[in-house]
Image 1 (tube, rainbow, N blue to C red):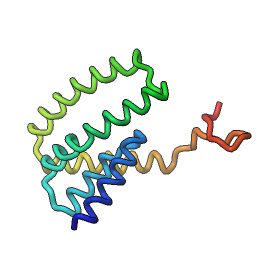
Image 2: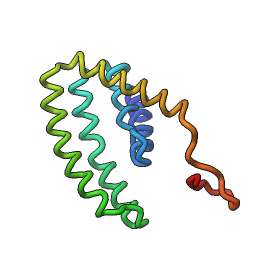
Image 3: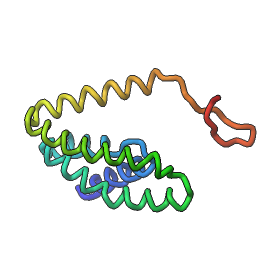
Image 4: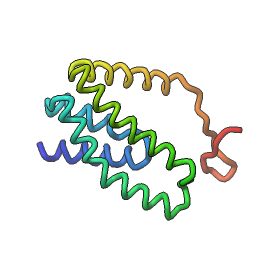
Length: 131
């Protein structure tokens, strides 16, 4: 079973470090395949991403890809939202949190599936944002 856990961790870390929501992979793995209760899976997910987030911030900082003046207010809002989400999740219960997560995951998937790609290939073969 540790092989499957390692594969899930690898893909969660890979996707998460690219900023693409690796937490969804980890939460699905923990709840569906490991039968972990939703609240516990959320806690594991948060702990799992601390070292990955720190490493990604260091790497992206060296590449000068982080606009700190933009990030700091977002971080403040995220911290406040985390406390609000914790309170709300305890208030509405684990069953509803699971259902809300499933609906949001489906809606995001549909949005991404039907959205037009904002990227195009450049003349040099790289990918650039469409104007």
